[in-house]
Image (cartoon, rainbow, N blue to C red; front, side, top):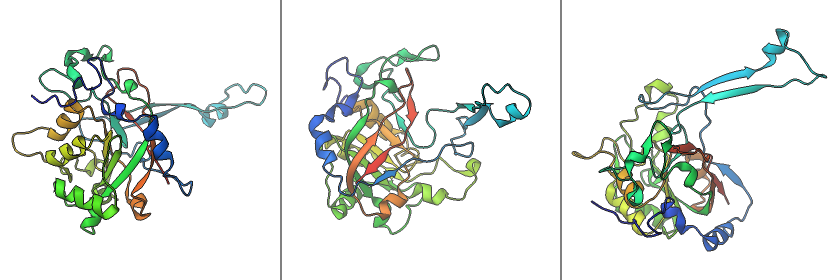
Length: 293
């Protein structure tokens, strides 16, 4: 059983690799801003946002709207307002996986007990509220560009392709980085109805590629697919990349990024900013990552 980063930041740590982002990394990353341009890497969230079949899609309800006033709701001194509510899974659209999201052998990252995550209170340990705001150097590794097309469904990205993508971009993953990988999976899904998106066939990184990033001490790994890793999984395994990065190395995963338009700008190195919603006991959070250059 691997425990590669367990104890690295103390026995009680619940933050994991984001501990690698300190004031030095923040200051260095802000120095990458040259033009003052900000690009959102997030999907819009709506009832049309696709989710796997085991999750409920987004539900959006208006609690107060113009129809209420048309039906005779009281208007106080001319003041009117709209109010609404949203019900949705935390792993929808562009989202971050907290360190309590996956575990094996009843142990989360850093040896925290899996039994502490239940329907009564959510996750007692490693909940998404424990993750700090993220401000660090972002790197875009455009693997799809190496093929001049989106990668085929199920395609497995190995270490060598990540190395080539990094070399082509003139960058090298380093401590505290947020590494974002473009596979083109979302581009292949463009125009499909939400219920026809197949989440079980995705290009993504393999375990060796994941370990290459982890051993470079990156703080965050993201991709434009839903699973980060290739699906279907290798025979005899289940979410092996999730297990190694989240559970063993304490590296949060950022899934469902929108990278095509940003990749076209040719900015492989940038200031990366993102902050999860601090949902106490949550296993993840929708998120709006920003690339600033």
